[in-house]
Image (cartoon, rainbow, N blue to C red):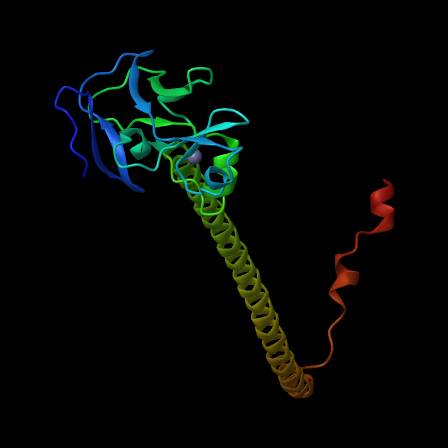
Length: 228
Ligand SMILES: [Zn+2]
């Protein structure tokens, strides 16, 4: 790790993507934190134009800073989509400063937005690992998990309802069968009874004394008496 003066408000440390620059002292919003520096490349020179690395900082159509040199501490600053610093470009002076755009607390990682071109070329293909993007991914994963859980519960409820319906139908069928059986049994008993009754009745009839006068007649009131 590069040696940094104790008076500087930052240090190089481990970050989620490798190394990063971290505040060691409170840094006030608007403060210049560190200069992004390195050899100036002139796009009109073939040799300069052929240089390609991840630390090129384009100042304008002609001038680019090659920040890949070890002494350029600012090259340790990682990209963030919601950063706490920005790159303050002075094209005429051919200088770039990293400036705080928020109050930064000790221990906080310092970040700035590398810009759309860098993002498209280097970060989009592998997925941006900045805190805002990680948080977004975590949220999406949590939402997907919740959705899967919701669908699972729904499917389970549906299966349970189906099973209950099936059980009810089977029970109904079984009861109908039982009823049918009982009915058949009852009919059989009735038929038997009737058979027996017929027998006994004929027996009774045989044993019965001579028929008496029908009670209905005896019980019916005298029409004459009623008229009176
Ligand atoms: Zn991001």
